[in-house]
Image 1 (tube, rainbow, N blue to C red):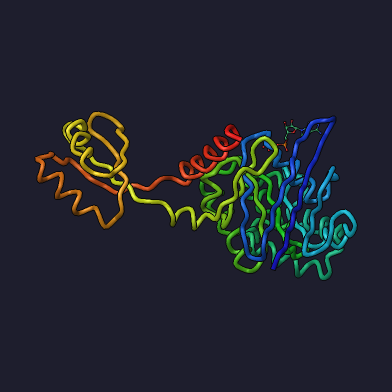
Image 2: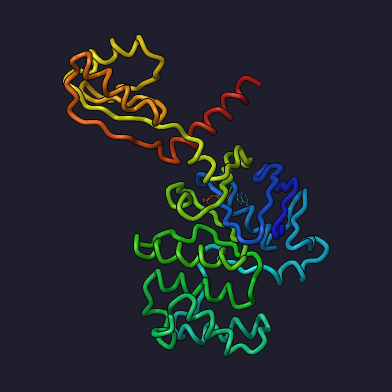
Length: 307
Ligand SMILES: Nc1ncnc2c1ncn2[C@@H]1O[C@H](COP(=O)(O)OP(=O)(O)OP(=O)(O)O)[C@@H](O)[C@H]1O
């Protein structure tokens, strides 16, 4: 089921186009990554989706409710951590949650608070003051708050900013669990590495526009294989490769990477040995998602230049 639908979304401020004709669609149970460099327009887009600012053009639907005309219903479906979650640091985590549950008119709030606190694993510390919390704990408290109203759509703006690796890992686990339970998660970041581990699809926004949208599993599946070899002298191998159809890249005097299908590995090794190449090591390597995406975005820019 479609939870978020963004059509032709555009925002202009003071004559400047900050978000330009975005189209996106996020389904139930899906983690959608919104990736782009600083200043690309991510926060502005998110602020429109959570109803903090109005779009200049285009529309946003949440579970079929148009934010422009049916705002209250649309917003009931959304939980968000946008920018730094606002908490009263001199109050306990629990009192913060009570406060927000009242504001959001959450029914049977004590039970719901207990559920979300258990989910984000803050039960032991929930009655301590927030000022004694680590950044990771504050972030989890923010998540608990965002989940109070059982949102169908969870929006996270740079959620792992400043977290240590352990905090990032924990946060990722929680996000994945929520998606597995059916929540649609829209998460922004400028770090691809963080996104590849949790997202099902990733859109890249650059200069206010989405330049590519990819299914992470498909991108990783579709990539070819490479072998990295270390030899006495790459020049000798380069010379031999001219007889073959392989494309390759020289990394240094001793190291090179050659693209080939898995089924060609053993024949390739035999070929080297047969030609007296002293093979010091051989291993298979994969492109990082970073390189793969870089290829997509490079293509896209090339196309634009040619257009
Ligand atoms: N109210 C505003 N008035 C003028 N310019 C703005 C306003 N809000 C945002 N911008 C500009 O729009 C661009 C996009 O900003 P935005 O915050 O959406 O980017 P971002 O992708 O979220 O980057 P970051 O990760 O740094 O927050 C920036 O160049 C910013 O300076």
